[in-house]
Every structure is written in C-alpha cells, then in structure tokens.
Amino acid sequence: MPQFQDAPVHVRVPATSANLGPGFDSAGLALSLHDDVVVRVTGSGLDVEVEGEGAGEVPRGEKHLVVQSLRAAFDRLGGQPAGLEVRCTNRIPHARGLGSSSAAIVSAVVAACALVADGDLDAQQRLDLADELEGHPDNVAACLRGGVTFAWTEGDRPRAVRLDAHADLAPVAFVPSTTSSTKTVRGLLPATVPYDDAVLNASRAALLPHALTVDPALLMAATEDRLHQHYRAPAMPETADLMLALRAQGVPAVVSGAGPTVLALTMSEGRKALLGERGGWRVLALDVETRGAHVVRNTP
Image (cartoon, rainbow, N blue to C red):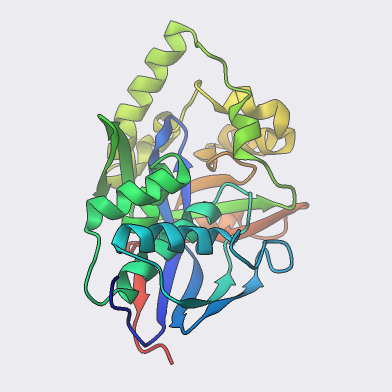
C-alpha cells in the first residue's frame, strides 16, 4: 500500500483542441482556459464538489470522471486511499470539443501521482494511462504537455511529441450553446474514403507542424481537411456553416475536436476583427498554453 501525502494537491489543466483540420486523432493544441482540481486524502468516504461548467449536471460520486480516473491512477500506483475529498472548479465547456473529459482524466492522473509519497508515474506512463482512460491520445497528450502535440500509437502504446507554437498564434474559439457527442459524430465517418482525399489529407497533415510552429501564413492550406469534417457536418450544420464562412474570409478555421466549437487559428494582429458579439456563439480569445497539466503550489 502506498504512503499518501497529508496536504491537498491542486492541479491546473488546460483545455485542448484536437484534429486541427487534417490531423485527425493525432494533432492537439493546448489552450489558455483551465480547470482547477484540488484533491485531498481523508480518513474515509468520498466527498465531491463541482463549481462552474457541469455543476448540477455531472455525478458527484464514484461515477464522476475525475474520481474514476483517480481510482485507476491509484490502482496503478499501488492501492487506494481510505477516503477522498475532490473539489473541481470547471471553466472548460463540456461536450463542446475543447477536451473537458481529457482535462478531467489528466487532472486525476497528475493529482494521484502527487498524492503518493513513495511512488510516481513517468511521462510515458502518464500518457499510457490517460490514453487508456480516454480512448485516444490526441487531447490527453496536449493536456499533459502543453503547446502543440502530435500523437500516434506505436504497437499498443501511445506516443507523442511536443512543439512550441509560433509566437504570434492567437486562437479564437467560437463556442455554441449546443453540445455534441464524440461517439455520435464519430459514427458518421465512413469506413473508406476516396484515394484523392486521403492523399490531400496526408499532404496537409505533413504541412501542419511547420505552419503551426514556423510559418503561419501556410495555415489556410495546412488546415484543409477532407477526412472527417464534412462527414460530420449534418450533425452540426451551424458549426459547418461558420467554419466555411470564416475560411471564405481567409481565416484558418477548423472544427475543434468532435465539435461543435469552431477554432480560428488567427495571428495576433488579426484576432481583434473576430471578437465581439456573434449571435448564438460565445467568442473566446485564447492563447496557446505552453504549460501542460501541473501542480499549483501553496494550496491552503
């Protein structure tokens, strides 16, 4: 049985956007919108409180995703504590394509590692567990490591590399009031795609790292996709319309993850033109979060 820290652990995790156009299930970007999770080991029981996004909607017991992920991480670390107190302050919108489930999973993995005094998981083991819990590595890799990430599976293990985004990259998220289900929209994807579409996506995905990190002038070409976005459009027509409208204006816009949020990959000097009221959408000016999930020190 592991030895547990007496003090609470406060973990901050970023929102993430996955796919970024052609990088289906591989490309990820950490964003400056955060959830905060404080976990304390107690003598018995389970006490969960949730503020902000999802409050009053998500379960507050063993079925809470942070709790389920804590349990999995503690099992991996050697055993369960007698009791837990979990406090979640959520700012990442749920079921909008901004990585809320990945944030919950990653916060728990990082918190569990910090709470165990005589054990830890290394970076690869944390990615292994987060991928196992989430089912795919793109969002969890960006949430764990920050910046721009590209993830893949090698054998039966997830792998990821992290890159620094271009300094002038200034994303804007257009978040609707409607939600989407990753499982539902994934079910709209065909079993096969035309060869020409596969070739186009391969070329754009190859260009995407360079455009995001070195030459953002190439982002319009680098974010072109024929693999998934238009197949999902019938499930979120307003999202598809906004993305296409922005791209027609020369703005590199993509569906964020499984949607329905639209992410515009603008530059600092062009972002202001996209801000302001837009009926039916919450417009968020975000930065690329260079720091992934981390423990916040000096928690009372």
